Length: 233
Image 1 (cartoon, rainbow, N blue to C red):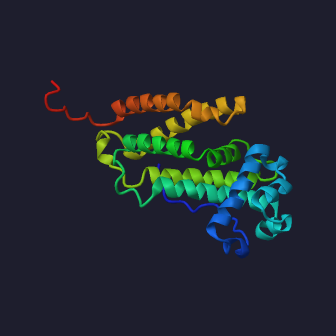
Image 2: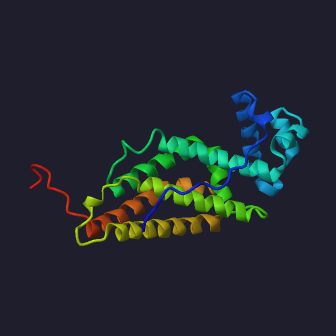
């Protein structure tokens, strides 16, 4: 399986008048909008509450974003970019070359970011957990693009020599992906049934522990034995 860097879904851009506002004013408006969507969902969100919380007129909201749909998609794109920027930073040069070590590093980094930014986390998570009615196509495209982008980053410049010589490294990576997706689907099913996005953070320790156990099993079967440490015998 080959993963290449995929283009992201087309982003929804706000009006230039919004982009011309001071950065702190832009962020205050985004925060007010995010909180309204998180508290009341896409269909229950009220522009009246947003303009009151943001300290701007209701008309300006539509002037800046055009519609509630555009506002939601803009916020989703912007929030995803925030997480991508924080996750990737200056690049992958300093990341572990071992695919299993990299998965562990990025999983922990992702959890820390979510814990540091609960409003952003809830908005992105709930948007992907339950696509708002009327936005299914746009959200499905964003989810697909996010998954492809994640794999492109995860497997960029990894060291394939750690796999055993009798194993096709691309097929090995595919097994890793299938395992990751299976575990993700398992826990998403639990969270969907409970309708409690915060449960994902409460399950973090158990999820990461299970990922590590599966990684250990896969690594034993697919990778070269690690050299014995001096004095370990």
